[in-house]
Image 1 (cartoon, rainbow, N blue to C red):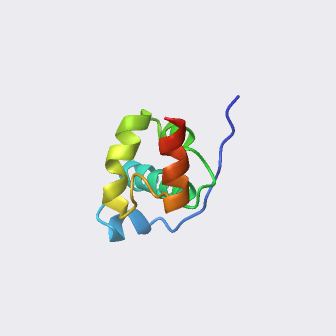
Image 2: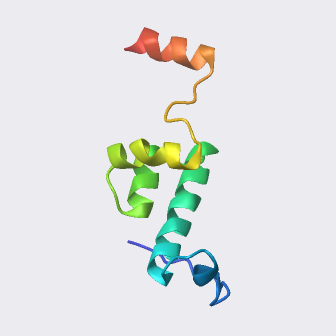
Image 3: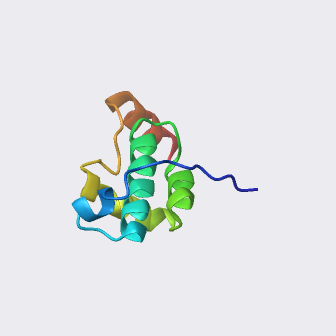
Length: 84
């Protein structure tokens, strides 16, 4: 099941950003997904699903938003290595 989020924005906003309406809306979805991922609120897989891409493509595009693909503390990294 899929739900829909409706966000009102000024009709002039896409033009001001030199984007089409579709490009702006897709960029807004990416920005939301990336931020939720960065805040560790959702997984990379869920974020990828939100923007309609695969997980690898999502991760490879994080640098466009200044977000690290892997953001682990030293303890988290050591735990991951021990469990590998």
